[in-house]
Image (cartoon, rainbow, N blue to C red; front, side, top):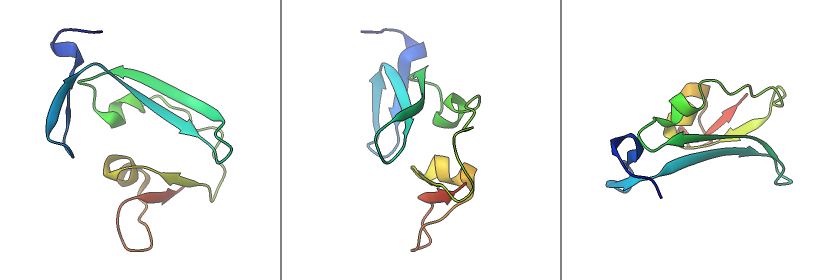
Length: 87
């Protein structure tokens, strides 16, 4: 699909490299897509969301994601893990 170093990414949790694009999606409990971002493989996840608006989030809404997202949001789950953030 895509070639070149621009599209070469790394998945740390799996310790593998890949060539391609990343798609980040924000949806609600009813599976309605509010926002999505498509970036090349080498772009860090947080960079992809740097210009996201999150305008649809209300105070108290929960955001579920991996460690990178949750460190940005500053939230932890009930076991103290960086997994669920409250907006």
